[in-house]
Length: 458
Image (cartoon, rainbow, N blue to C red; front, side, top):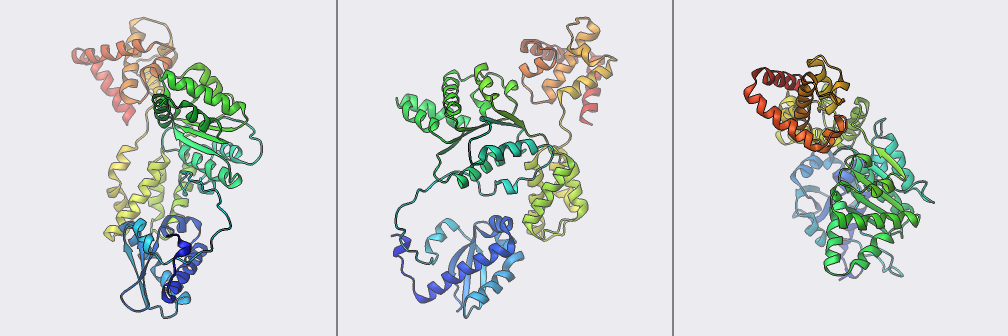
């Protein structure tokens, strides 16, 4: 039965009207960010057992506790103004998806005709106005806003790349939101590279590749995430190449993301990389201290009066530097633990609560760091490690540096080889195995390796 057919009694209608007024008031007084994160998920469960009382529901204990602590009084005042005979309210934890089926809703008039309904999978939290900008991500933000703007796109494709947790996903969702707002009837297709591969293979098995191709190539905005996962998949790359060509050739918008720049993608055909570099390539770098502080301030504004003192905010901003997701997660964890244990947040509480996080986010080691440390330790120049010299005084330190690069970074063997003067990955494998063998028989070499590891990790 449609909502338009539901008939409500006078008391239910009054409660539904009051709830609509309360939500509208909260939307204005709390602000969009706090409302979206904490208050929008709240549902009206109905009247309480006591006359004039109201029951509200939220999907988790943490949200229920937070709203009860920070907004119960405001909710009560708002209901007093909107609901005659109001006597009190309770905020409960429940399955809001099921609870919404019994909420008293005001009947709506039948629309004169059907309107298109879009089911874009874009997270409502990830919009342009909630993206905190700094020098490390400004170009990426400006490029994302430009490709989502009305009119003919200035460049397409847009290739976004960064390490995990720095904002690629946020920007891609924000592009979707903004493009949908300015092009309500547009066709938007967004998927991961893995999903692209899975759907293409499924279409081939079902002998129905035409519909798969038509859906993607007719999109006004096509977004594909984590393109590095098609590396080595020849059939998928063939289809991906033709899809990219069709979309670009038709003047449509194409957004691609990856964990590295196009030229650093291993196992991806050069013709694809050439097409991806045809538009604009924008990287997102780890946030600088000023941006980390701005991100924390924005998050604290969303949380309301979370009671996080200045020195603790500075601790997070200075100690958690490489990943926005980790930074926000640490703050959320701190606030949640304090709320659930009824403790005050101070430096001691923060260091105990986040001990594992603070240990796990120590300085990330790069191949450049390793090369500089090894060169200094053996009184060489960094360029010696990259050269073709085979003298033992250079070759052995070079092997040690390759061994440390394999052990202490996440870079692949081909990437390590390129960083050492364009050497083949088999050379890296030989170096790693040789140093592993020598560490068991050569105490001096083992001592050198241990000293370098302590220096780099310190």
